Image (cartoon, rainbow, N blue to C red; front, side, top):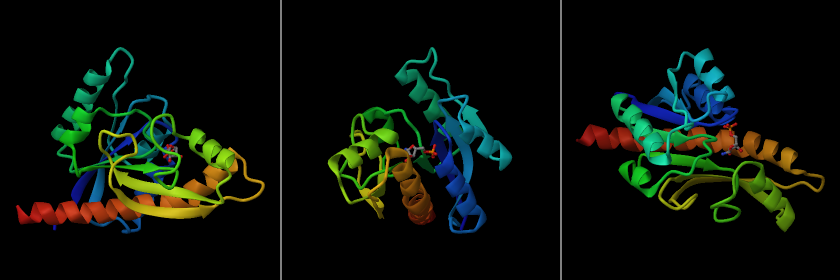
Length: 204
Ligand code: GRF
């Protein structure tokens, strides 16, 4: 069957994008191919990763664009490039209900905690790990979930737990959660959802 086309939205370092690129190369992701990377940040190192792997990329700079105009441009790119699955990989903007409804079932996100803990408005990047350490949880991890209008609120697809160590600080915990959880379950989830979309497309 034809591989589905995956679009990855990024804002920063792109280590989750790199995990997807590596998973496609090792055929862990075999039902889809990364066809486009879109960033809201022209300085995102993720763009260098796309370039180094010959993946087309576009910067949709929010400077001067209001949220609606930004989302319209992104949706145009998704439609023009016939993207079947959108993956938010270290993407930092909150997307509107209007945008996520248009992509229902075709947009997923990686969040660096075990949802429903430490998620929702204001919980992103290092803040998530600072909250986990402040609370004193012994286990944290990462979650891949469908995206809906509620920040980090969509149906959970995969989760992976990671131990919090006595001497952990936010940075050491973030690194372990990325290495042991995010970079493992995001490729697995992308293959699962790609296969589902591929089947649905095949049935049409
Ligand atoms: C990661 O902690 C990810 O979970 C969060 O953003 C951070 C950076 O991701 N959403 P990346 O290195 O840009 O993929």
